[in-house]
Image (tube, rainbow, N blue to C red; front, side, top):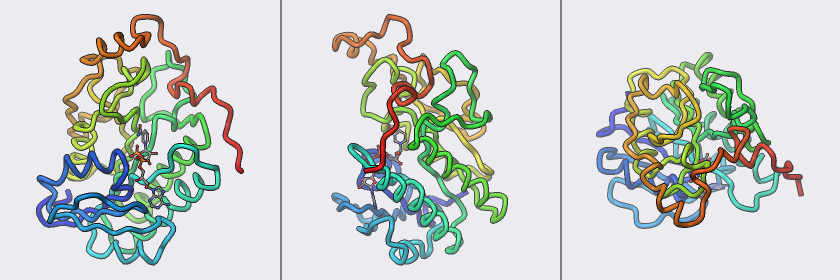
Length: 269
Ligand SMILES: NC(=O)c1ccc[n+]([C@@H]2O[C@H](COP(=O)([O-])OP(=O)(O)OC[C@H]3O[C@@H](n4cnc5c(N)ncnc54)[C@H](O)[C@@H]3O)[C@@H](O)[C@H]2O)c1
């Protein structure tokens, strides 16, 4: 267990959407947060220490790991990224952060994986985190790389970790698929909080959703982790219906990865 009162936790990608939700949800209990991002981090409180750095700056990573007991990896490229950017952040960046953490004696890593790590499974299949990955894209394959690296860090170095296969993180659900995959801001903080506090998660993979009525996966490892989500996308179904979203018709996606599983692969520019 990581002690929220005394131990330093480093959050990477802290200026991003999930990083910002984690700051809001974690800072009342977690007294020593170290935050890093390539972008400035807004309005730090007195228990937050901010470091602006590129994830590719290994010397900066090594410095910021000092005295850190746990790392929460939330860095990511979004929008119109190239495959080069994706590789640099989601493969090389993941390696550098994990390796820097290992050398600094970090004991726990919480990692932002994704639904796209298993996105090629048919929606009708009983999918659990125990099944082999079936990534639906290079993005998904690189997320599996991070999960695999965590397995090696557990087997060889004893570092405990929780990989969160995050579904759709938004303030509210946005479409039919997110009625199954939504992860609310409050629940992402609860999920990371219990991933840090658990006495021994081993090398765990969990699904990262709220308590959605329409969840399509099974045995998400929440009971073992002690995660008790409090939100349900179904409470927002009227809002979606009013927006013209097809919430009553047949399920639109044949695979767990939704549109990713069918979209053309992005080419390196
Ligand atoms: N949002 C979702 O629905 C979702 C779903 C599955 C997985 N994830 C994963 O969760 C993580 C966080 O997602 P998010 O929605 O908060 O994304 P986001 O884009 O809002 O945040 C990512 C942060 O990473 C930072 N970053 C990018 N390149 C960097 C670099 N070279 N050096 C340092 N920092 C850099 C960005 O500045 C940004 O603040 C990502 O790894 C993403 O792949 C998100």
